[in-house]
Length: 578
Image (cartoon, rainbow, N blue to C red; front, side, top):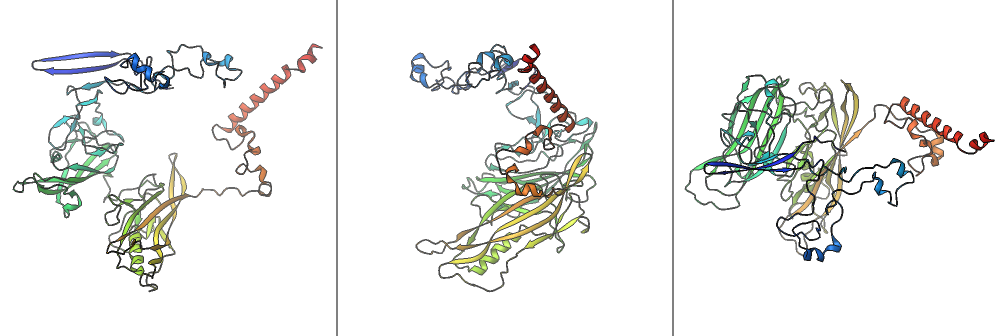
């Protein structure tokens, strides 16, 4: 049961008129002791909700229509139901015989359901005492929203940042960058948290988008009392504006002056211990018509790097891998080495030509795919080559790092070679064209990536994991071009996919089964419903919930209680009387 501080919740409504300021205060009893919503099924204000018998807005005539079908339980208004431990609930058919000795005598007002649905907080309507955020569309702070949680803005950045703390400006405002919420909405004024990277995309209408130039004049607290760091901004022009802007509507006026919109913003924070030493920003923008309409896709990235790192190739752990960090990769055959392995991140129609890449994250199994367009003029050999080239684009590396901090400049510093199994040969020349029935055999359709990992010790009590090996394997399928009654000059879609599986190898090999365990399967707990070897499970080595010594002590205590109960019961009691 949750414990909440005994306080009162207040809802304050502020109204501003010409020359005067008024305030109405409605005090609501603390919902820890009294339900805040006595009728949860009352969802519509000013109207009667059907089947909600506790709705005060329902007349007796309307309630009579659905009285036999009212909502039951907490949702129907029974906010203080009988809980299982209450003595008045002993009439329940499933109540055990010893229930009257251990039940609880308590009034219904002291219900464990109090505070279960809502935990009160004070909400304020209007701009007074609003926590400020630095809006990138202007150079001055603005209120975050018209409705916000009334919490004091605590600024501890003068004494150093901690992981997850919001980055503050000298104006005691949050430094914000658009981010995506859990509901999928794009929040324009989302605070940036210290040491938390993100890469998001937001879709915005051009007619309501604003120029984001406030970063030029931003002054960020670096984590030291009185310390300030100013971002260094670099502007670039987008080479392909159609990649970011979808012109779904015509222009209102072609003679208007153009304006710039930011399509990508990349932030790099250099950190040293609990301070920020440098901020670099690269903004990619596009010049559009002032009255142009359409949908613009913006990308915002934030990356925290150590102050002494020479490049932007961040570690995935130190020394072992951290869960959720990208798998580091290296291509020993190229000058510009790749840094990670990829999967597809398709959107729209799911075509491979428009799909983007996302990194393979350590410890996370994943499955992705896209659709490859195949024309009627292509033969089977060309289809095989296109499929192999598409699947190979995901794994362009030759080695992966065993540890999260392996050095890219030293191939001997913990790098394992990628094993490519059963690579199909597309240069055999067999079946150069589509057969009579339009069937192509042995077409690569799926890439399987299996990564072996293991625990390699501990640093300060934290388990360090490393990669032992990696294997890629292609699966072949037979595919037929689907053209219906007539084969028109249109493309068909061939699905390709890639899967990643992490297999953890135990540090010590398990004990091999004995001959008795192999022959007598009735004692195998995995094959039978009754597990005799674990009859005394709490006092065996299988139980890991408590130390073994405590389990043995508690077991002996229970045995002593059992022997005492047997001694005081019949026939021992009758023997003592005789």
